[in-house]
Length: 319
Ligand code: MTE
Image 1: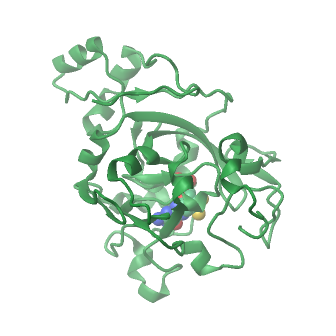
Image 2: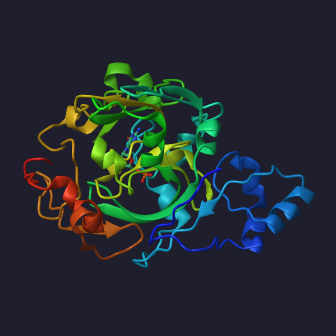
């Protein structure tokens, strides 16, 4: 049983109606431990339909900034997932090879409670929330996504890092039978596994999120099924997909894009309109589906929540 302490951005009551839920009936069958709201009446209705009795909560985001959501179609048709292809419009057509059944996540390193856990069991440990976040790719495009999942902080509290753990390192699946670019071995576009990392205080920030779905359904494969990181104040490459390993370490992990090109990509990758990428300006962005560009916001609009993490740091140096 999870006790939920509500935040400013959460509504006071669950607002998914039986109708919406009924319409999601098909998805329900597929959902497993993913995110859907329950209520007595709805569960009764579902019981009659012989559906699994899922009792997970899905706390809707209040969307205080009134962000306009991108459509499901937009979010799932323009993807960066190099393991499949560098063609952003092509990931959706080939991502079906990703098999997410019996997905295991290993949590190891400097923690009191390491675990190797089936994803369904892992998800059951947490309260499922919706987080409507801005998402800004370093390439200059952006979107607004209603993610479902749980806070990274809630997982960290469960595994209890030792005081020597200073960073969290994340790793994507390696399986050349699934990912065509991994099959190319050393001729692949980048080195695998894809690696990302956060400083432990960044990881503990309430915005850091492990997403298992979007738009109330399981995570589409092209978006990083079955579980991915979402760090909304950082460029999108920090938001590593299809995670199989989370390690607590004492040294700053060498993340994939820093390893590929440290002149252009660093460890922090905080969204910053005042620091240009060596090859293009970061002042503006194009929201998927929009014709005109809009101003990029400092820390992608999350300055209030995260600026204090970087007090005293030269953000021109720590890119
Ligand atoms: N994770 C893995 N494993 N492989 C990748 O190629 N691309 C990153 C990030 N996570 C990537 C990844 C980049 S560059 C971006 S912008 C986002 O995923 C894109 O997420 P989306 O496809 O859901 O929009």
